[in-house]
Length: 613
Picture 1: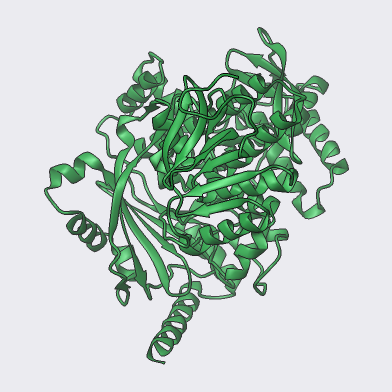
Picture 2 (picture 1 turned 135 degrees about the vertical axis):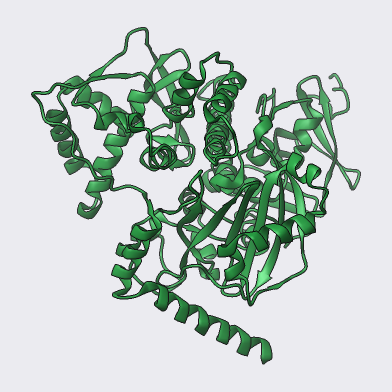
C-alpha cells in the first residue's frame, strides 16, 4: 500500500461518492438529481455559510423550471408565490426604444389560482425569486432527498497529487475523501483556483454590479395573477435592472464598466443614486419606495474556465463560467450544468461508457454553452451604441475568438452565427430559441435588410455533408447519457436527434420548401404534441433549419418559379412597446395602463395597511 501526497491511503474506502463545494443552486441541483436517480450514492455538500442566506441573481429563464420539475421541487417553489416572470421589457440600442420580450403571448395568458401546476402556460414561464428563500428551498430539498448537507463547514484546502484530488481538508480539521470532487462554489472558484485552472475574461465585459432592495416599489406591469416582466433600462454608461421579488420587495441594480466606475471618482452609492435619478422609467416606479439599506457591489466580469475537468474532479455552475446578467442566464447555467454533471457522474458510476469520453463530453459541451452566452452578451453590448465604430468593435471580438476578419465580415459573423452552436435536440442561441435571438438581432439591425433570417430568403434547401464524418454524441435523458448519432465537421455537430434529426430526414426527403413543410407537418401529427402546440412545433422545426443553415449544414437558393415561405413565428414574442401595450389592452378588454395603475394603487394601500398593523 502506498500513501498519496496530502491524502488518504490508496485502496481505502472513500468517505463518500461525491463531495461538492457549495450549497447554492449548483450544488443542491447536482446533489438532488444524483440521489433521485441513484439513491445509494453517498453525496456530501459542504457549505461555509449558514442557511438561509441572501444572494443576488434573482431573474430566471424557463429552462430553470424544467430542471426544478425534474428535481421534484417546482411545486415547492411555486407554493411561495414568487412573481411569475412572463418576460422582460428592454430599452436598448442606439434609438433606446422600448421593446418587450415575452416567453408566452400576453394576450393568451389566462388567469389561474396559485399555487398552480407545472402544466400548460406555466411550462413557458420562469420565476423571479428572493434568493434567501429560493436557495433555502433547494437546500432543504437536497436534505430531503438524502444528501448529507453540512452548512458552516468550509473547505480549507484541496489536497491533491498532481491532477488527482486526494481529499478536502475542512475547516473543522477533518479530511473528507470522495470518488468524485466538484467545485460548485460560484464566483469564488475554490477548487478551480487550487488546481491552477485559469479563465478567459473578455475585456469589454469587465463590469461591476451595484444593487439594493426596495420596499413598496410599483410593478411596471402586472399580468393576471402574479405575472410580470423584469425591467431592463439602458444608460449611456450601463444599464439598470428592476426585478420584483414579491408583492412589496424589489431588487434594483446597476451594471456598468469597471473602468467607468474608476474614472468617475464617485463612490458606489453615489454612482448608484445617479443612475436611478437619470432613468425616468425606474425612478417613476420608485417614488414611494424605501431602501432596505443593503447596498452591495461586486465585480461582475464574464469569464470561462480553460477546462472543467480533471482526473477525478469537475467544475460546475458559476465557477465554470459566467455570462453577463443582461441575458438573465446565471441560474439557467447553474441548474443546467449541474444537471448535465449529475448525468455524467451517474453514467461514470454505471461503468458502461468510457469515463474519459464522458468527462470530455461534459467539458466540451458546457464550455461551448457558456462561451455561446458570452458571445451573445458581447454582441448585445456591441449594439448598445457604446462604441463609435460598431463593426470595428465586432472585429476585435472576432480577433479574441481567434479569427482574422474585416470589420464587415466580423459584423456578419457575430450577428449571423458567431454565437451559434449545437444543442442536443433543440435550436438554441444560449438560453434563447433561435427565433427570439434572431428577433433581437433584427431589432439591433433594423436598418440592415440583409440581416433577415436565411429561411425567409430561400425556397430550396440542400443538405451539405461534404467533409463530415459520422460520429456519436451524448444526450442527457431520464438519468442516462443517451448515445445518439451525429455528423461532425471541424467543431460543428449535427445531431441526428429530435428536431435536428427531423430536419435532417426532411432534407433527405426533398429540397423543395413546400414538400419540406409537408414533411414537417406529417411528422408533427404523429408526435405526442397537443393540437394547440403544433404551430409552435412547426416553428421549432423551421428554427432548426435556420440553425443548420447558419452552421453550414444546409445550402440555400431561391427558385423564382417556386413559392417562398410566408412565416409568422409562434415562438417567443419580441415586439415594440406599442404592440405589446395593445396586446395587454386586448387581454384586459380596455385600457391596460389604467387597469395596471389601479392594481398598483390597491397593492400599495394594502401594503401600507399591513405596515401600520
